[in-house]
Length: 317
Length: 220
Image 1 (cartoon, one colour):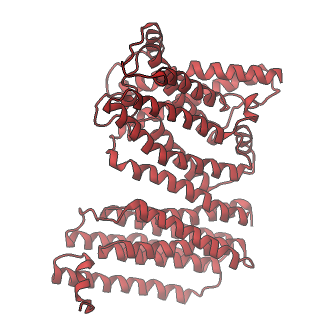
Image 2 (spheres, rainbow over the protein chains, first blue to last red; image 1 turned 90 degrees about the vertical axis):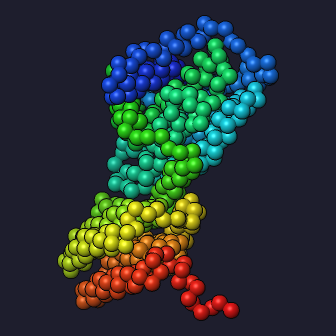
């Protein structure tokens, strides 16, 4: 119990410390791939520290909601990220919260962000919020279908039990899992506003989604929102790693060495996922807004199809 | 039968349903034909695997026929037809991809729900094959009614035949003579349809079959 609490605490610190590094790594690699030098990998930390020291400039029409929202967004995302087993299973809170709770926490964070985008009353914020909601209305059902697929297989929605099941011999070769993985990757790309859907590096008004919503934010508020978006990227990478590549997770009760190995393996997983993301983003062009529904619709279809196929194979098995 | 063998069979059959959905998702002619070649490739792999686990050597011949005729000959012929008709670059106006895909998912759910209860006496492999092949057949029919271009309708028709092969494989004991005659009638159907396509084009300067509707004789 005490150990679980310590692991949980370590987990919260790990996600907080690693997430800007992951973003910095992806940015650096993308710059190198297109032949530029790029900012150093520690740049996101410096940006966050600088933003924390700066004064907040508030719009005249901003209400209390505008000031409260960044902290709520950050808190929801942080809790959600800390619930995913990254380097060790058997977290203290993982028995109280499963994958559906993580989806719900992310949904609440998105709700706050969309409200904050609308609050000041500029047209940019409104556009950003409406686009974010359009993406969410397709991405969230797709994510839930993925959760259902994995839960039907593993018999549990707890990430720890799913990771244990995926390591066991009972998994076999399943087409549903491949479909769920593709659907989850599409959802992760869309939810984090990565390239085919949104470009995190531009402020071009016609295309942006996430940047449009936070255009009015500055100072420590902006730092909170930026950190929350870094955490969200780390969270999706961790969920994919935990469900589809659950090797090296330390189990409760093993010694310190197991935890250190888990941490090393987790860092390797992050580096692999970050490299794949950077290569993918360099190779592909951004999509038109009107095609989002086709892209995310494919994820939803894959999720539903994965669940349907599972019904046949479960009866057969 | 080992769980792994069943899993691989399930992988191929499920993959075939997925490729059927991908056919519905395409809006370009060249992509459509390439995905159809993939469809035939998956069905041939599925039949070959089932020949291996059922110890039924004659199924290998079925797989070979599917591979040669439907994954190589027919796609090449279709590519040539499409280029000669001058429609290889056209993007076909599909009526709402999202809506078509939703209908497709509904059809898959329907066929699974229909097939699983009535085949409860049969073996696991047959049940799986029958429910997936019904989905493939229904998706092919959906393709034929939701597309306006005659070439897409031909591809829908050919994908239905792939579904029938899957059903026949799972059912055990379909004579090889039947199989070969079905394959050849498909080939002859393709030739007839190809000639027909050129006739439509000569007459109306397009292969959009909506123009045929005026000639049905139903108008008052």
